[in-house]
Length: 355
Image 1 (cartoon, rainbow, N blue to C red):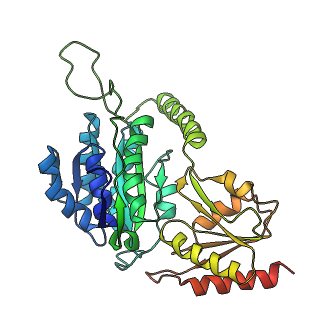
Image 2: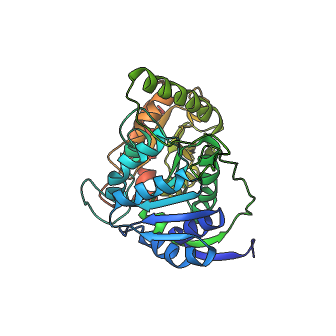
């Protein structure tokens, strides 16, 4: 039943939603803490006429996605931080060929092998350096199991709409936690893909999927055309949640799992008479700059909370045009903030900035 509430892990909810969204090919490789996605797809895909294949490596998996996407089918891969680094070349190839696909990153601590605990230290990788060359891809950052499902569906729709890879940037906390989820009603939003390589039978032009341009002027023109598309994405895609920001003097901002803890700290601050609010970016690229610009005249200070040494903080400073102090509070290596720790930071800002 479409509206049945089910108790599921975040990873499994995302995988089920992807199947319901029409994903026909999944290629992956095991790595903690995302392996449940691959395990779930291995059981589910054959039952719905899809293809599951555990590749010999992360590099092979993303190139299989490239091949499947070139035929026009909905294709997905998933991994955790080190595996996404290995996939970055293939992501660039897909972006250079304007191929729609979905890449899921269930982040873990780094750099290097790091650890298997939750982290948010792949923000730069996702939003600034998803691979080599001039390109961007939309990045969604869910903060609940329900959103893991919702944005899996949306990622496929937006990938097709804009002919682009789309990343879902999760983390080990969201991937492993269990919450009730209701799967969204699915409508057939797949467009006709006249560009796909499906065999032409001499009835249409011969489609070629390729990102190689030997003439520099042609590559430049290709990049310029793609950046025109990015401007449309910047206008249409940004999503954000605001909470108690109307009169907030201190705005705390975090994404994904961190935002859940931020909300608790904001409520605790309000209980103590401190006018705190929250901005939660849902799209990390395009970044929802307007939400910050709209508050910069009333807020006195901003606090950025991340499970990293500080990456999204740069985008917040840019979005506020450095008109207000922007402080950072991060935990890293898999250590997770507590609401009390964030509340202490809010109190410190109230003491020093709201005199």
